[in-house]
Length: 445
Ligand code: XLS
Ligand code: CA
Ligand code: CA
Figure 1 (cartoon, rainbow, N blue to C red):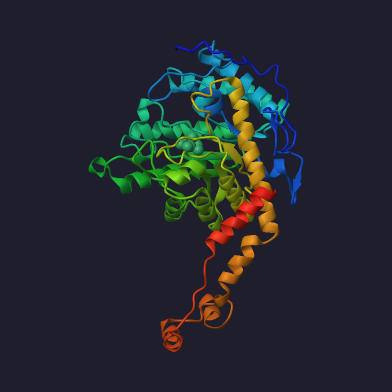
Figure 2: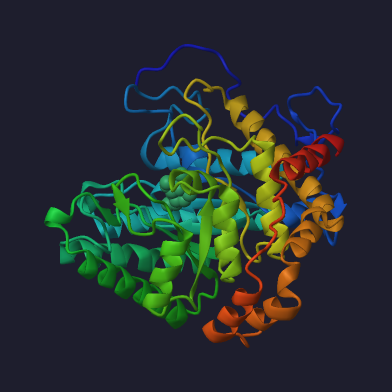
């Protein structure tokens, strides 16, 4: 691979643990808002935020894009094959230590390369998983979730569980079986299914009903196998509307919940909501969190952001304070994330190729969510929006409104009422005033 000869720090040996220095600090290698031990409400920041580092973007990706080769300058650049996998693993736990994150996440193929056969691939995976287990024990860093990469290899060209080829379905099953065994071995708090290529490009060659049936069958088999081997982590599904396929089956939270309910899977799965996938679906991040939450299915979060001017999955590090505040608002109202966490499914830009950019990027994301947590907590504590909302719906607490809420009204009683009360007065929604309140809280904190 052709690399530029730009200089950067070659490894993390000389970097010490990132400390909280407060909002006046100008040290780029310090937290300005994330103070892991600060208590907010009933928990420390560290317990609320449950940060996680995504192996694929941070350790595995090299900056390759559609137009150019890798640019990242990494201490593990000189290795290949299994030596590369081992060098990455060493660097991963160094990075987790410097940033003091409690969790990480990976796809099977991020941590170890594919071999010439499934047997060899599994052996290579086992070797790295064994080493990873030792590192986890020594460092106390835990696995938030693992997943199977069933989209990169050409065998998955038509999907995995939704492929038109039964052999591919079988291969995918073998891969997820191994993935669940890995989750058990490493005590993963969750196991994730993101659709990958489970979707379609044209109905002219697609039996959509059959593919959805197959997907449900596959997920039921995964649930059964987890039960069989005693893996008790939470199963998660991650919605995304498009990319790589034109129509991803797990389009958004509402579609995914309908699918889970349709196939009797909603008892076994929760959702992993990603910010960038929410915006690609034409929703806000907070909308998707709310939809999952009101169904009791908010499981975990992939913390990133899309670019407002680009229509694809840019997976930027989250720095938008409105988004992090409104997301933390939803998460606090949900009572936290349970076994989930805030997983930085985010990549440094291709031009941010220095090793230290990985630190700056995570610090930026952690600070943005810490600030969001503080502001959201105060907004809830002071009932800033709650009281407005309660007041706004007050007509449902008495009279005809209460009858409607309590299921005591019907079209006859409502018509009778409407005939007598056909002149009504609506009140302003006060959106601008509420946004100014939000600004006030963001600036004051
Ligand atoms: C891709 C997804 C993916 C999942 C894990 O868009 O975000 O990275 O989180 O397979
Ligand atoms: Ca994701
Ligand atoms: Ca993404």
